[in-house]
Each structure stands twice: as C-alpha cells, then as structure tokens.
Amino acid sequence: MRIPLDLPPGLVGDETSFAAAGRWADGSNVRFWRGRPQVIGGWESLGGGDLTGVCRKVFAWTDNAAVLNVAFGTHSALQVWIGGGLNDITPTLARPAVTLAPAPLAVSEGSDVVTVRLAGHGLADGESVDVSGAAAVGGITPNITGAMVTVIDEDQFSYVYSAPATSSATGGGTAVTVAPQRAFEPGAVDGTGGQGYGTGAYSTGTYSAPSTSDFFPRTWSLSAFGEQLIASPRGGTLYRWANDTGEGAAPLAQAPRQVSVSLVSHTDQIFALGCNEEVSGVFNPLCIRHSGVRAPNSWTTAPDTTAREYVLAGGGRIVGASAMGQYILVWTSDRLFIGTFVGALNQPWRFDPVGEHCGLIGPNAFAIAGARALWLAPDLQFRSYSLGGAVDIVPCPIRDDLARHLAGAQGDKITGSTISLYDEVRFDYPDARDGNENSRYVTVCLGDGAWSRGIMGRTAFVDAGPQGDPIGVTPDGRAYWHERGQSADGGAFAWFIESADQLLHPDQTLMVRGLWPDMALQAGAATLRLNTRLKPQGPSRSHGPYGLAPGASRVDLRATGRLFRVRFSGQGAPTAGRIGRPVFDVVPAGSR
Image (cartoon, rainbow, N blue to C red; front, side, top):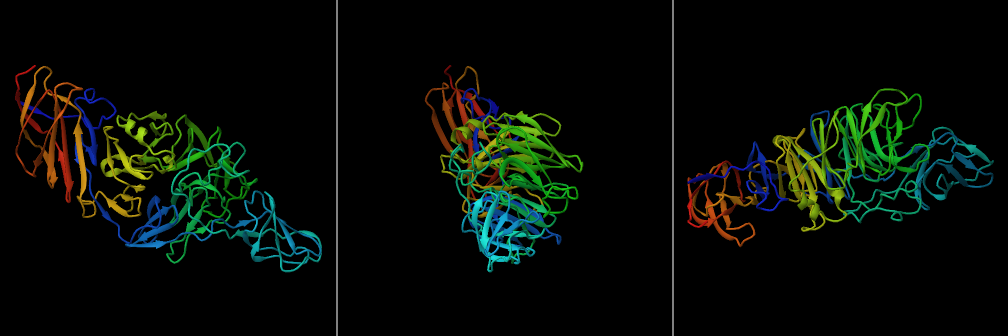
C-alpha cells in the first residue's frame, strides 16, 4: 500500500498533536513557498567589520550618484556602509540649535548675567550652550561660546557674559540662536519594564503621561530625504547626514528636541511623531509636527510656512509610524490612525482613527507590504490593515509559543520586515529561553496564510530594495546579505520540519517498510526520523535517523504503529531542499 505525505502548507503548533493531524506541527528555518516546505536561503557577510553596539534598525538607499548606502542604528552609534566599508557617522551633539522668539534676552545695568527666554528649554544647571545671532541689548552684544547655564524655571535660563550691561533692557533681535552642547550618549540595550506613574523624573513628559526615557531599548527611525539620511534615536532629536563620510550626522536645526519616531512623507516633509509641542516646548506623546515642504529646517507654524502641528485624540502614546504610499500610518499604544494629505494651508494633513484596541507593541514591530500593513499588538495578536478597509486579527496557529516565551519587558525589540521574493512577512523577537535578545522569528506567507518559524538571532532586518537582497544583523553586530547561497556565511546551519501525528489508517495498525523521497533542489544530506505510537497519549517509539542522500530513490526502514510523526531535517554547508509529496510504503501489521 502506498500512502503519500501530502500536507497543507503552514505550521499548526497551538493544537495537540492528534488535533493537528494532517498538518505540519513544528519546524525551523523552513518556509512554505508555493504550498510546499522549502529550506530558507543562506546568508553571506556584507564585509567591512562588525557594527558598534546592538543594531535596532537598518535602512538602505541610493545617493544621487546611484551609490548604495546602508545605515545602521545601534544602541550606541550610527554607521553607514558604502562600497564594502563601514563608516562611523554617530552624532556629536544630542540637541538641535534653536532660533528664539523675538527679543528673548534680558539684562540689568551693572550685571554680567543674561537671562534667556525659551519655552520648555529642557536644559540643566551647568550645561553648556553657544549663543549666536544676538543684536546689542543694554550696551552689550552677548554672543558667546560655551556658556554655562543656570536654570531659572522651565521657560528661562541665564548665563554669564564677559562684560556687564550698561543699562537694563530686553531685546537681542530676531535671530538669537541657542545651540546646546550636550554630547550624544549611548542608549539602553534592554527594556527595564512597563512604564507607569513615578517611572520618570519629576515634570518629565505631560501630566499623567509617564516618561519614555531610559525605560526602552534604544531604537531608531531612518529615512531618506532626497539623497540624505534623516535619523532619530527614540527620545532624541532629528539628525541629518549629508553624505560625507568624514562628518557625523548633525542635529536638524529648529527640530523638536525629543522625538519618539520620525519619517519622511511623499511630500518631502519630515515628520516628528511623539514630540515637544511647538509653543510650550513640553513633550507630548501624542503630538505630531512636520517641517515645511522641502524645508527641513522650517518647523514654525506661520502663514508663510507649511510646517504644522497636530495632536492625536485619545490616550496613550505614539509608538510607531510608517509611510504607506501617499498615506501615513500612526500606531499609538491602543489605536491606529491614518494620515491623509489634504493640501489645505491651515491643515495640510488630517489624521483619522481607523481602529481601536489594536496598538503596536514596539516601534519596529510592523511591516508594510504594498497597500497592506501587518503588525504585532500589545495583546500579542497579529493584526492587518489594508487601505480603505478595517483592522483585522490575523490568525496565527503558532502564536502561543511566541506569547508564552516572549522575553519580559523586551517587546520594543521586535522588528518586522517583508521578504518580497517569497511574499512573506517576518517578525524577529526575543525569546526568554535564549535570553533577552532577539533569537527567533515567525513568518507568514501572504499568498496562502502559511506560518513558519525559525531559530535565528536578528536584531534588525530589511527587505531587498535598492540592494539586491535582504539584510539582517545579529546581536553581536554582524550584518549579512540574506537569501544568498546555501550556508551560514560558509558555515553550517540547521533546519527541520515535523508533522503532527498522522493517522495513516483509521482502524489498522500499519508497518512502514520504506519511503520514496520527493525532494527537489537538495544540497547536502538530509535525514528522516519517525515517531510511532498506538494511541494519541500512549508511549512513542523513535525510529532513525535514516539518511536521505540527494537523488536517493528509496529509503528502507521498519516502523510499526497507528500514529506516525515524520521529521525531515538537515545541517550542513551547503544545505537546501524542497519537500514535495513523499510516499510511504506500508503494509498492515495485523493488530487493530
């Protein structure tokens, strides 16, 4: 009797083995492509050396000379790969220069103290600032480099000038610029737990909104503004890198000093989402501001600018955002909003809610596939939204394993990406069984909804784009081209796929005498194992391993039972294969 192993695509791991009969139950580094299991492609090093720090974001674009640039944002650095070499473009300063409102300086006769009015300045006692562009006030022109700050209140500070004023006055003109000299510092590698009242410094953030600083691993937003890079570390300001490997990224003048996430829209406007309000300077986790059109240093709302500010309705905080064609998706901790460009001068963009109780677990835990977004919400359900539709839950029959083992307080590390070559969306996440860092992934094929998973540590991942292949980064900072070759950068990698218990005959005990393999594209040896049992919760017996050499026409074996669990696996360099419809040679074993 010949019985083919012909199972539907996708893993079903959240059911008992008997309930999942007739399905694949477990696997690692095997995807489902065109309905059949296929070993994933290998990976090869980009070269140029290891990154500095733990990478949380990778972004590829081309400059005006069509040269490929790949930026990497880590917890401690910003680096760019060009032509096989890695360049450090980490910012030096942490804060942007700000041009103040008219007449922001006040002096008193006989005193060398200059008082500065800057709403929500966020400076600290002893911090250094450069002051430039000031016109004469009270007989002095108080421009200075490296002035030490004394904080008066949240909207005023003072510094000591080199000469006393000859009269009391308020002024300084309309071009006074303050440039804080606070150094750029590394961020956190790990999350430190859920936020709540009392977790941040007093007065940090808006009333009733906990601080977001120091409680999340440092993540980055990376976008292209023309040929230039716009980068923002979570909780920091916006930076621009002007394609000079000899210079680091510099703070974007006039931009908000504290930004949760950022992006560049199709209108050539830079968006800061979750940022300081324009007038008060206070951080509002639901505030959205954008620059003028093609004006990256224009952030002031005025009749002659296209810079504007919006505040989303509802509670929570902005967690992530992404451009999707001519629209912008904004996830808060509880809702999804869609941003639409309407072109009105007073309100160029409009942000409307499209779903509730469907927020985002971490800033990068989403992927955009054409006009569809998929993401992981705080309740650990996968969700989907297509333009013009509603937010839907995406069934995931292997979700329980992720939910049970997701490392505590590390959800912000989850990163999503498409793999367009195979019509997939991939989510890398930290599994507590392996520690606090990303160590495993799940994928779903958008064509047939088949889920798969694997053990592989990637803290950042990006699909092929201007570069020919996807790029993934390991926790120790090694960047790889993915879906290249059939090895782990020349070394071996392991894969397996295993069925649930298969009831080959409803009443009869059977003996399997052999297997006719059906494997295409095989590279390297594979193995077959069988586990048999008589009852769903009865004792099992293991048979094998049996070698499956490339081109083998038959494997002889002896295994008796009613329920058969089949496992194909491989480990080597190279290793590859696509499993078709193998056939088992069976005979009745006599007992019922």
